[in-house]
Image: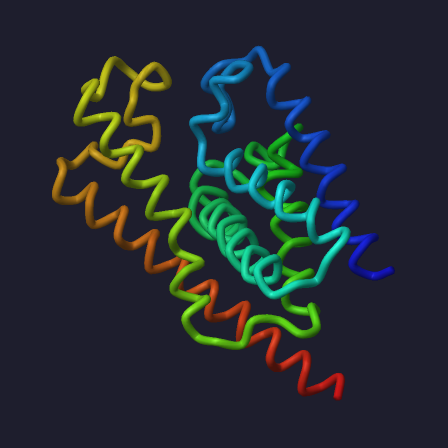
Length: 203
């Protein structure tokens, strides 16, 4: 029952967030674009991933699904951490927790993190923390490849470098990308450690 409630909530909140995101008409405000152009953002994709993973989790607790849960929780926790501890202090948390971003920057990530930490019978092998960084690696490679092929483009928000990673050149951009991959791995380790601590306490 616990799993069905949490996973149903994730699916519903992600669906609601997507409706709000795709109907947004204010381009370039609060880390959002207009309509389906929002699919370029890591935040939106990581939350969609969490929603997709929650669907099979409604019906099964098999090991592959639990591994995917760690991956999705790690991905959404990157969004949560960057907004809460970096972008929020710079631009104001209130500005970044409006409308769909309240769900995608805060509520869904917190639920996915709580879900994994309190999940029983999770994947205990260390390798799954490494695998959890794969979605971030794929996204980052796609981001950089798009710029290599199509160029940076115009001014923000109408640019392929919408995260401004290359503001200081390719070397710094690649370093930023690697730091985010390491952050994803570190958050996966924290989630795994939190789950192990929870399971020991509940025994």
